[in-house]
Amino acid sequence: MARSKPQCWIDAHDPEHQSVQLLAEQLALLGFDAFTEPDRLDCADNRSLALCRLSINAPGPNPEVELPWIVLGDLKTKPSHITPMAQLPWPCDLQTLQAILDRIWANRKVEMLAEENKGLIGSSEPVKQIRHEVAQVAPTDATVLILGETGTGKEVIARMLHLLSNRADKPFVPVNCGAIPGELLESELFGHEKGAFTGAINQRKGRFELAEGGTIFLDEIGDMPLSMQVKILRVLQERRFERVGGTQSFKADVRIVAATHRNLLEMVERGDFREDLYYRLNVFPIYTRPLREIRADIPAIAQALSERLSREGRPAPRLSDEVLTALRQYHWPGNVRELSNVLERLGILAPDRPAEIRDLPPNLRMQTESVNPPKGHPAVPK
Image 1 (spheres, helix red, strand yellow):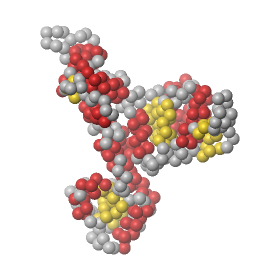
Image 2: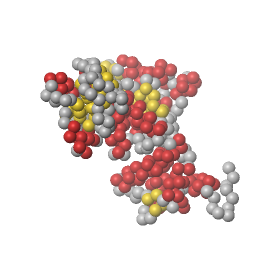
Image 3: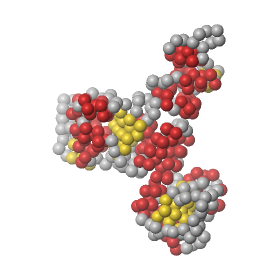
Image 4: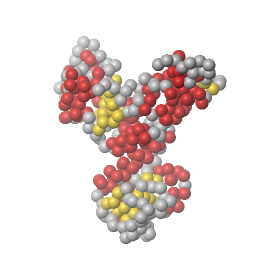
């Protein structure tokens, strides 16, 4: 993603006015460039970085300029064709202005990630809603809990939260809590001192130390043993931890994002998950959608996955209309992960021609034939 600064257009009749110069200086302090010449929007590169339009006691904006509009002060005339997304007193509180600009910039970066195939792909309303929620919460340090079925892009969302945050230039450290044996998880997360246990021949930093200043992603936190849950609770409450076998306390300057495919509330009722930890994690829940609920996005997702196969030097499939129809009809219990596997299979079986129905795995072929049986043959009974 480009590291160029986002630009704010200060719409002013007199660009040399003292208030305009003051606002430009304030924007620079907040990390944004400012310009007053509307002609700069004619350049595509500038237009892609143009973040918003700021008016100081100015008339309403030109409706042809499609930028979020922020009004500072009172408008002398109020246009009927457009409503400002925010209106602040002038001079304005910089913290409030930064919060608004950060949210706009996060929304813009969400779109840029999608264009670069690094974020959620698709244009359905559920996907747009998730992208909106990610953009709103990413600039904050709020703990996020991502909930959804296996293979629905929970790690993609976690990485988006990191890339869109103010911690983007610091580490993103994923930990699969379900893949590490319970007796080793504490050392993996918090590190250990030399001699802390048999085999600890050297001091070792844990994932929380490695993620210093950045984001730690606790994937499959529903698989975490109860004995570890209380230690994670302490980190969330006190933002401190100790290495195994050590007494020195370390500050945990990290953003915590967690995810699971399990129903944590049911686990709380069974006593398998701590209730206090659940409510500490569930500050801002994001619910992913299974592929069967966003069937309209399957062609776009398949295209993005095929492009990734090509970039990685693996055969990428060309999908015929009948194959795309079959992909949309299938129920996808394994979600995007299963779709990725199917596309890799198609690329291997049909490297030099469009993939056909016969190239699909048997389970997809059977469902396709049950929905669209060949002429002269009855449909397979359900």
